[in-house]
Every structure is written in structure tokens, then in C-alpha cells.
Amino acid sequence: MDASMISVLILTKNESLDLPGALASVAGLAGDQPGDIHVLDSFSTDDTVAIAESFGAKVTQRPFDNYAAHRNFGFTLPFKYPWLLILDADERPTPELSAEMQRVVETAAPHIGGFRLRRRDFLFGTWLKHAQLSPFYIRLVRPERSRYVRDVNEVLEVDGAILPLAQPLDHFPFSKGISHWVAKHNQYSTMEAQIIHAQQGLQNPSLRTALAGPDFHTRRLHQKALFYRMPGRPLIKWCYMIFVRGAFLDGPAGIAYATLASFYEYLIVLKTQELRLNPPK
Image (cartoon, rainbow, N blue to C red; front, side, top):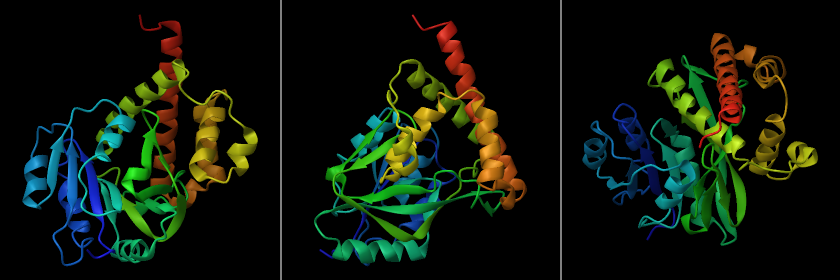
């Protein structure tokens, strides 16, 4: 077996629009050998399954419960190769990233558990270079050493060292239109509010860890926990994205994205207040 071969896991539900591009983008990760592409589908009602099978992907269907549990189930699938690329249907590894991934897994030492890459989000054809708040993601892992935590905006924990990759992963979160993005984030905001209301989040966040923690994802956990305790979060987020991160430098797309992200934050605030006033019985 060629040590540079990589298995692929794509999670889907009604992804007939985006899935063909995702499948085409990972076709070469097994070299000249048959690819090992797995699609974990949440019972799509469109042509998602047929499209996956037409590309030779192995399809497993499972009802969606929450993001961490669903993704953790994905790690139990029978992958052919020791390294796994985790992909969403609206993401595309660039050819340069695919080549880099194949190089690094070929020589990866046993203590290395995964690789972190930079994701480039696009809106209106513009890379949101400044507006994007969380560009770094662990996506290339040894699946048996990996586990997701948190039900929404899940975090991947990996047993072993995490090394960076230089080449980008391209992400098109608005490929289905603004309305689809808003509908999806309406669902996310409900789940976020439920987590906050149930106090499932970080109970004792540290400002020191939030600012200077050695691990990016740990910093993000503490940052979010502290942020949830701040008044006026939506306005603070918009000002931070526009003026501190420099979202305006991305032009109209950057300003639009900052406004959408702040609206999402406002939904979380409102739904959390609603749960506190009218707790579920």
C-alpha cells in the first residue's frame, strides 16, 4: 500500500448541488489506485446518494442527531487508508493542498495525530481574507485518534501532535444562496442557545488561555465562553470584524459577511433570552 494514499469522509444531506465538485476535487488522493471515498448521508431526499455512488463513493446512511455524535460515528467507518481527510460538500482541496497532504502523510512520524490547514471562505467570489474569524481547522487525521466534542460548532480533539499545512482548503458557504445560509444558521443559533441555557459550555473560562493558549481550538473555546458573557455581543462582534479584523478591506463581501455573522450572534442572544423566560418543560 502506498503510504501517500488518503481516505475521504464527506457528510451530506441534500447536497446534490455541491457534492459533484467535492467528489471531483478529491479524486486523486489515492494516486492511481481506486479511491476510498465515504459519504455519510443523513437520508437525503434529492439525488445526493445517486451522485455519490456514480463517483464510486461508499454511502452509509444515518439519522442526524447532533454534529459531534454524527461526525464521531463517521470515524468508525471501514477506511482503507490510515489517514483521513474530513470534508464538507461545499469544500474543495486545491490541487496544491492535495499534493501537500500526500507528501506529509507519506513521512508522518507515529506521534503525529493530525494536520491543521487554512480554510478560505468565499462570498460573491471574494475570499474573506480579513472577515473570516476562524480560518484554521484540523481536517487531516488518524481517525482512530480523533474525537469531536460539543453538539454544535463542534471541536475536534486529536491524540497526538498537530502540524500545520501551508496550502489552502477552499470553502463556498454561500453556494446555495444567502437564504440557505440564513436558514442553516437559524438552526445553529437555536442549538447554540440551548447549549448556553443548559450550561453545557465552558464553566470557568480563562482570559489568559483565551489570549495566549498554545492550542488554537482551546483558545477559541475560552474566547467563545467569555464572549457569551458580554453585553451587546452582536454590535461588539460587528465592530470587531469591521474595524479590528479589517473586514472592510474585503469590500462589500466583507461588510456583508460581518453583518450576517453579527445577525447570527443576535439570534443566539434572543433565543437564549427566550429560553430563560420560557424554559422548556
